[in-house]
Image 1 (cartoon, helix red, strand yellow):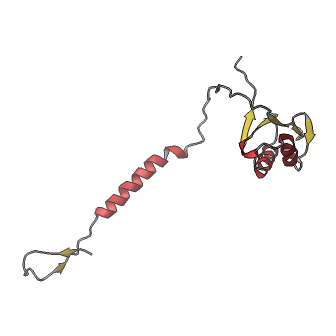
Image 2 (cartoon, rainbow, N blue to C red):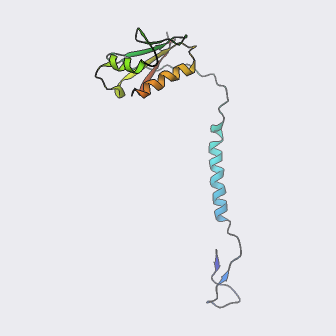
Image 3 (cartoon, rainbow, N blue to C red):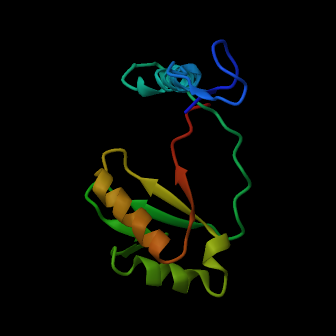
Length: 144
């Protein structure tokens, strides 16, 4: 609430109330909201189709003994060249890696392009549940 400290018609010890509305805080809040909406509005448009160019990244050197998990179109799961199941995947990878720290190892996932997304996510979740957080997705190199 605002107070009127000096004015006509009264002495200096008589304080009267100011009944006018202070709109400065209201304008400040509205300007902040306007800026937020101006910044957030372009981010909300994700349905725009864009023909992106192919990304060609320099390949990193492979680890000393890479671990490949392959998913076939039928859903069959392979660790290297050996068939495994989703329930045994964590145990098989840990046994294959020996004493190496799973949080520092990179697992390479090769999947057929027609693999169900759910099957792929099961493999990813199984790897994370067993402590493998560094995952690389292997794709076809069309640069040559």
